[in-house]
Structures are given as C-alpha cells and as structure tokens.
Image (cartoon, rainbow, N blue to C red; front, side, top):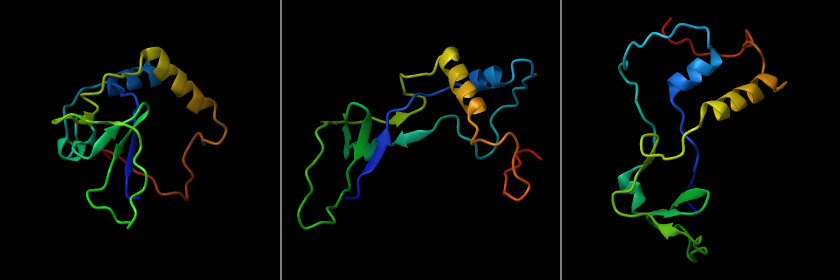
Length: 127
C-alpha cells in the first residue's frame, strides 16, 4: 500500500501534434509564458531512490511502511542514482503516423462530443 504507479508512456512534440491536428493552420511561436513548463517530470531524482523499474511501468515505493506486515514487493530493478523520468529524458516519442492514428481514434469516438456542452465548465486560454 502507498505505492505510486507511473506507466511508461510516449512523449510527443506539441508542434507535431498541432501540425497534424490543423495542417492548414498557421502556427505562431510566442515563447514560453509565465508558469509554463517545457517538460513534464513524472519521477524526480529524489523519488528515483525509492523507484523500481518494471517492463511497462515504474513503481515509487513509500518511504515508510504503513502496514504491520509488508506486502510482497514487485519484481523490478532499482533505478540508478540520479535517474529521472520526464518528457525530455524519455526515449519513446510518437511518430507522425502514431499521432495521426491517435487523433483519428479520438475524432471517431462517438463518446467524445464535437463541441463542449454550454453547461459544462471549460477552460479558456489566452482570452
């Protein structure tokens, strides 16, 4: 109990995603805005000391055991000192074809509305 499971997932360049979603749209590079991050960190160097790597995920183990009897530990390899898992250190990146396939799946999903409901809260960026 208390573990954090971090799946191994691919990264994507936002400009590649924007180009595939709106190939005919103009894109203006305005630079990083206050509060924005260039990369997402899923496992920090500090957390890596307690992290095991498995085939399809990482498991960050709790510092303290909250249970009297320790549960069986997952089979995994301890991450090396200084390890961090983030979008800029990830070696698995989506190709244009994979991005296009994901976008097509979202567009074809009948459970995803074409436009937001007027009664649902929404986020307006840059407005």
